[in-house]
Length: 113
Image (tube, rainbow, N blue to C red; front, side):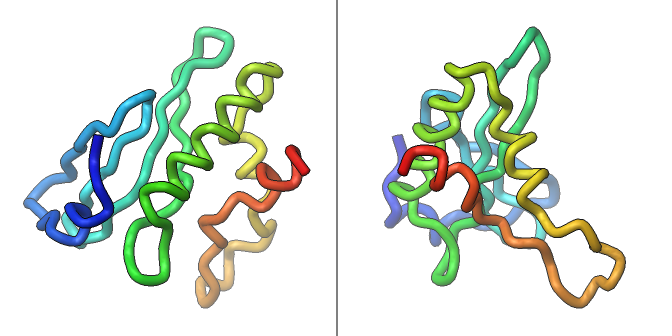
């Protein structure tokens, strides 16, 4: 299990590396220095990965990422892919390049209100 204090200390390497938190959640440190939360799961025998968000001053805390994994597990229990839900929530037009799609999952939050 990681702590929020350790995340800023992670340094980029030549290749992406992963550090496991638990229950399928891990952080991936990209060569660019971005620390991305990721969640691996299986649904119908197929492996998928959900990226709840990135760490940093404007990103997610570790507690928020763990909360999103709990929400994703609730969707999995009902047979719904959280990665597919997130893809459907992303903007359709990605050709402009100026605006990057949101890394947040508003649909997952609304499922449990």
